[in-house]
Image (tube, rainbow, N blue to C red; front, side, top):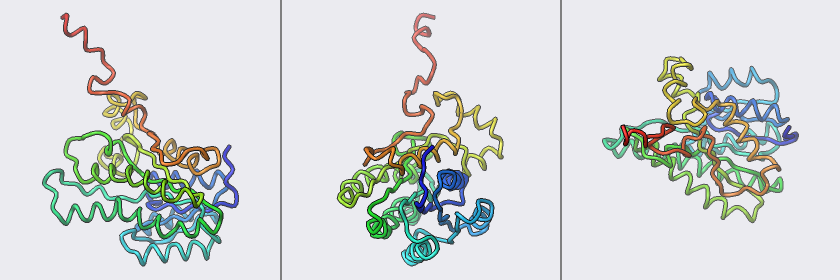
Length: 262
């Protein structure tokens, strides 16, 4: 059991399904959590559900003023910040037909929002002797996928950003890592599948070694681990929480050689 008592985590995008499970995992480890999200209805519901150790702050990560306000209110409410989890993102993506404005919106949200939040929060971590940041990459940042361009490019950029942040902040005892989930039971998969988990698992089965979607709880436990002292030797690294998605190639899990002899 990881003990994060006396620690405070800020989770941007905390009102999403993945963000909710991350908040729950931190609370179960003894930490206090700031849920920072643009969705005030779900954010407030989550804070009410999880109790006094969780506080919601409406935050648009494309706004420097919103980020500043979130950090100030976090410190006023809980006394400091030890961890930042950059979950918030947009799935805006029209593939190769994406417009300049769509490119700028996607990169501003998925990459620049996380970069600026990290830049602004790290002085507070330094005051507490160090901290940890977990960025959210994706299998989309590692493999070409049909119909995608903006999301994939932004997630690939996050992986590069993570390495450079880790290098630049190591002297301040701040570790920066990322997680790259596979297909995960999340807002987007829930909505695409009509909230049908069985159907979604069936679609994901051939290209995940685990033969199913990744659970949001599995992503959350990995995030908490990366923030803990148990991961003190891990820095500038991407952790694939993808059920084996990136371990296999286009042959997937089927031996195709017998087809040559048939």
